[in-house]
Every structure is written in structure tokens, then in C-alpha cells.
Length: 470
Image 1: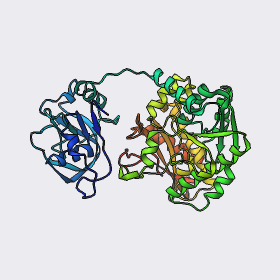
Image 2: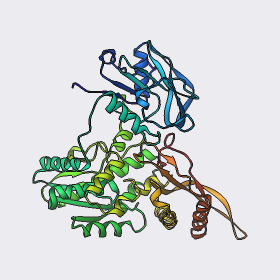
Image 3: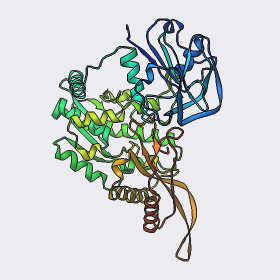
Image 4: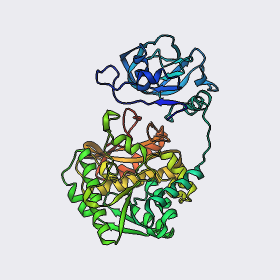
């Protein structure tokens, strides 16, 4: 490969296990610039003779580090009162340095939060510079890539778009493609990309699974019909709801919804002659959270659009944005002239409200959640807060709570408001919405929906939580 540099990523395993993956010592002694991040740092340290131990205090989320022993990694990085805000996610830590290494960063719970050996060209960071919640993480990575590895940037968004269009054309040729279009950012950008590449050979299927937001069917259909994209509506709500009857386990819900989607697409594909491909809006975080291959990662939650297609479908799978993060997808979408109101929409999961209703799913709960979610989103837009958030929604909880309405006792259900800020959706912080605003939304929901007695606000980041509740 003759690489200019290598980044060893983080992962869910522990270096202290006998079965843990190891970095090859020959690689560490090659002289190729190496940056180990989290697990990558720990395995490098252990193989070079250092020591890794389980932390007394695990760090998940925000931490502050101080810098020591000048390092090129931190060139041009501005500190706030001699500290840098970073994002941690670890249960182990390096406790003894390998020979001839030096500390370059420390936190209150992790003395060796960064190390280096300039002569061997090896660097390690316990925190994650690649996530948006590490302040100036992009600068740190740029220093490694450009200053230490000597790489150069010779591409642009427009180059990537043209390359993607060219790749689709060479893959698909004159064959027809069926796309499962949800109206969300990911599948909408795929629709725009495929429309540019193959035009009339793209056929979009919009499945109404009965778990969509209020008014979403009409909005999606009118948007893509105006773009002259072939979009066809399939009402499969009764099928989805019957398949989900009595199911409360979130992984089972996701898999049932995913399998039902495939059944619906298979049925629709048979109605259209010469369909050879099924396209999906799979993005990289979907792949990461659904993967458990070779112990490289653990299954966080199964995404319905990850895992391939059953052999019986006899269709080839097309996933043109599979290697992109959400922020990159939006940049590609903008270059393809995707309507701004689509690109600015908060993400909506493929399983829809099915994974925002904890416990049993039924039409009554769906209707209540649709109305509550619309109240929340409408108020966010009215108060000019919507565009400052990355995602906001309401969750239906499987608990009841006592309330007082007038002089009467109300014993009804509980809803949770969720709002987060992120760029890549791999990490996220909970949004610090004004208390007065949260109170107003809560009052509206409880006053307008008689079957709800209480509203709570979720103040958990990712990690340790995921953005969606299921």
C-alpha cells in the first residue's frame, strides 16, 4: 500500500483481554507515521512495552485536557484557560509509557491522555479528535495528516459528486433501479444523485408504514413530484401494524420493520418490469451501529437498511452514500440542488415512530405521538430554534403518571422531549433549550392531549446514550 500515514481507530474491546486484537509490532517499527486513537493508542502502548489498566473512573463524554511536552499534533490549537475540551469514551487507560515515549496531554482522570515518540513517528490520543465535540479536533487531525504525514488535499465536493455519478452510471448502465424513498435527508440525496445519473431509469417507492409524522405523506409526494422524479406511494400501514402487534423488544421491532420493508419492495418490484437494482440511503453511522463482524465493533442497534438483501429478491444492492457521514451527505445534497427544506429537515429513522413508542405500538399511541411531535416541532420553528438543533422529537414512554387537571385526578401516559446538537451523529450533546420554551411545549402537550399527564426532557448525551431511545 505504501501509505503516507496510518490511523488506528477506537473500538469496543479491552486491550486487557487475552483475545483482544493487537497491532502488529512490525507496523509500529516501520517508521510510517502512526496515530492511535483510544483503543489504537492502548494497543500500540501495550505492544511497545507499556502498560494498560482498567480505569477506576470511566470517561464517557466531555473532558478537559491540559497539554505538556510540545507536539506537532497541537500546533495552532487554541486553549481556554490552558485547557482543551475533548470527547472521551473509554474504560481502560495507559498507565505506564513505553520506553522513550513522553506525555503530551492529560485529564483529571487520565494522566496519559496523549503520548508521542517523535523518533519512531508514533502518536497516541486517548480522546477522539474525529468527533465534532472535541474542540479543534479537525485541526489536530489536520496536523497529523498534513504536517506529520506530508499529505496534500486534491479533491472537492464537486469532484466527489461527479465521481459518484460516474460510478453509478458504470454500475447500473441501462438497468432500472428501485429506491426506497422516505423523504429524509439520506434517501432524498440518493434520489437526487440517481436522478442525475440515470434519470428515467430511477423509480422511487415511498412506503407509508403508518409510522410517519403528521402530514408527511403529502409533503414528500408533492416535493418529489415537483422535481419530476418518478415516485409511487404504497400504503402498507395495516401490514406493518399487524406485524408489530404485541412486540415490545426494540431489536425485534427494528428487524420486523426491516423485513416488512423488504417484503413490500419485493412485491412492488414484481409489478415493474426489468428492475435489477434496489437502492438504499445507507450511511456510515448506520453501518457502524449495526456491525459486529470480526469483533471490530458491537451491535448498538440494527438499522433496517444494513445487512444486504435476501437471495429470493434477485436484486443487486446499490448504496452510493454508504461511506459518508450525515454532514457529508448534506454537502453532497447541496451540490445536487436538493431542496433546502429537505436538507434542513431533522433526521427521521426508517422505522419511524415505531422506535419512538416504547412498548406496544397501536394506532391510538401513534396518533397521540404524531400530534405531540408536531407541537414540539412547530414551537421550535416558531421560536427560531429548529435550525440550531440537529434532531428533535418526542418519545412515548410505557409508564403512567398521576396528574391534576382542574380539580380532577388524571392518571395517564408520559412523553419525553429529545433534542440534540451534533454534526456527524456519531456523538451528540443534549440541547440546552430555554426552560421557558420547554415549559411552554409541555403545557401545550398536556393541555391539548388529554391522554398525556406528564412531559419530561432528556438530558443525556451520546455517549453514553444513543440519540434515538430504541
